[in-house]
Image 1: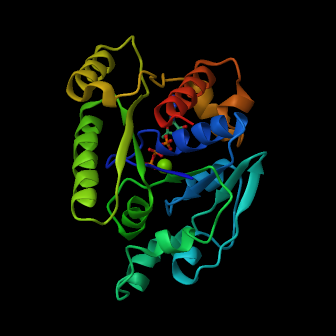
Image 2: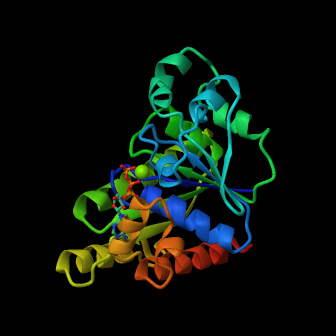
Length: 247
Ligand SMILES: Nc1ncnc2c1ncn2[C@@H]1O[C@H](COP(=O)(O)OP(=O)(O)OP(=O)(O)O)[C@@H](O)[C@H]1O
Ligand SMILES: [Mg+2]
């Protein structure tokens, strides 16, 4: 089972969009994929129109959860929204608070991939996600603050591995919202590639209105606009991710 967290310290960089479209891309290639919605905003759940009663919050608290099949080969574990936000206080006194996801997930089997859609913060849920995950994908929209977010996310990942809380390997940094018409987008991409070299995926996710529209209709980009740049880019990403993992 490949355990992949999608996280960066900056908000709105395409984490959820990548979780749902990469997840569906892998499912379309025949892999069994579970997307775990680790964000109290519940965007990944909303993207598939899932309003589950029980979610990650309940899994972390008492081990009980509902998993929804959202497409062939594609499953979703919803966040539990508000209850996920309240979890910090409820788990604060528990000594195993940073290992609860790892322990709970050990009982869930049968998936080839677990993709964790994280929120852009350092909280107990994300620390659980990073303790469980073995690979990290860092989406970076092409602007200055996002590049700073990449830097601090890499530092966080190194800290987690160094202090034994997990063993994270960076699968790749993903340029998102790429718009080659704007000089800032080109400059940020060049900076990203010069700074991080091979760590940056060859695939760039271009700015593409069909991606945004697809979410309005609760579809993935492959379903909504299969011939769009968005579908092409996420297909290319799925292929590159499989190459990097070599499965
Ligand atoms: N390549 C793209 N082209 C155009 N719009 C995009 C693209 N990727 C994402 N979006 C849109 O940008 C917005 C933010 O994307 P998304 O929700 O995936 O980011 P996020 O990193 O998960 O945000 P948060 O930090 O709030 O969880 C959404 O409205 C999404 O539809
Ligand atoms: Mg999100």
